[in-house]
Image (cartoon, rainbow, N blue to C red; front, side):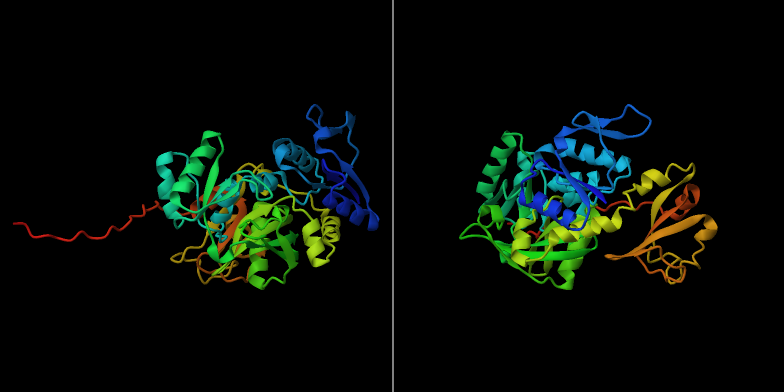
Length: 397
């Protein structure tokens, strides 16, 4: 396999470990500075220039895109995708994970448990937003920040209001998030590769510091994750479109709470803590996947006139409940079920004998007219009415 590591830090621990792991397995590998690429759109086929020359063929890339070059870096990764070069992390996945608000929106849509979070702009909305997440103390986060930078714990509503006002005056956008007191100063980093957690560590903050990042003096220890933590970590990475990710979770009273999904996780801390060959696991995964370049299913399949991709939800009152996929007659209507989603489980290429249950979600490709007939009218959202305490009735006179 011919592999390129996209990195501006060729001497960093993570880049060196990935390079060594690839060479030890007999692969060709080069470290290429992401900023030295030029995206070539002048020919009949998508192409890339590197240092002014046409780039040679590569089987796969490992993007290590820094926060400061997200836009250009993801454009380069996207061009590799157009050239059918395998990347474990898509450009969309990197962009989604880099923006904390966007990542939170996507994860919440897929029912991933997270600390209660809100986002506001107007000063008048700040105090109601803090109250919605449970009141002070509250965590304030910059939308783009790494290694604990831009994460502030405000002990009171007045302090939180002052911090948010100051940050917004400097054109910074912030999230307001519930402070999970039971997990103060501790979190879990799970390193996901493909569809499994290959290593995990607990990070513990130093002294009174509530941020547990190693770069802020935190200590690390290897940890064995139970099935629930592993499932949540893998699911969060998959939802973000990342095959290699560091998933940070708080240990809440009711289970794991996802804080962040990192598309360029550092390897030094977790390899040191666990004594595991995480870099080797990443290289092995890529080696097994190079024959399967990333494909945007909706983009590719929607090219067929009159055909497209849609998700069908099996509602409890539908006549599909209790029927097998075969009995549902979807194939007769020119509809193919690609995956069946049941809760947090995903069944790819389901058999016709699978019995449908209420709230199953079917990702389908087929005739758009037939798909439209099967999609019910969207229900209107009901406004949540906040119940106020009844006022006491006083007799007059």
